[in-house]
Image (cartoon, rainbow, N blue to C red; front, side, top):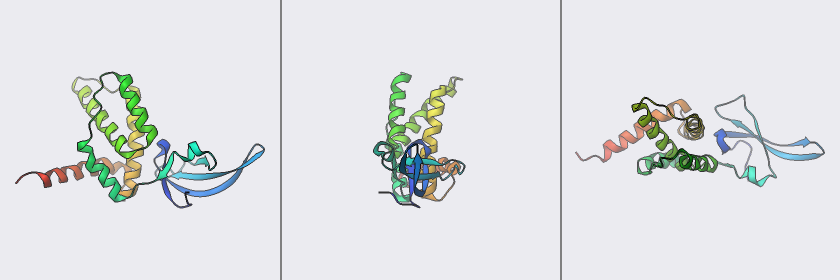
Length: 174
């Protein structure tokens, strides 16, 4: 299904390279594992049991440049979550993080950025849960986008802003 050398995303770890498919002994059993190295966290290694369908399902091929640009261009059209109750927003955030879907993550981040701006205007901050969820979503989205676009994860937010500003300027009447 997946090949050594392939770039995938895995759960909340973001973009990873499959560095090996190797057998390892765990107790009495020998099992085959996908060995993943996050592209932007070289000290981490992730071992995914190849026979565990639930964990392998959390891996997917990384998006290419065109797919990433489609996600970015869809951001203005995505509706942010407007639930006032934190618990309802949490449910959306958990779903987006667990899905790993870049469009859902972009929508989640748009919502969190709007909540953050509104809170800052009142002299308040995001809850610790929202801050953590935002960091996880940014890691997932930015690492995959950075890989596809050939830039660093820290440059992704500026790239998105410039891409959307350029697109908006191009579509504005003269």
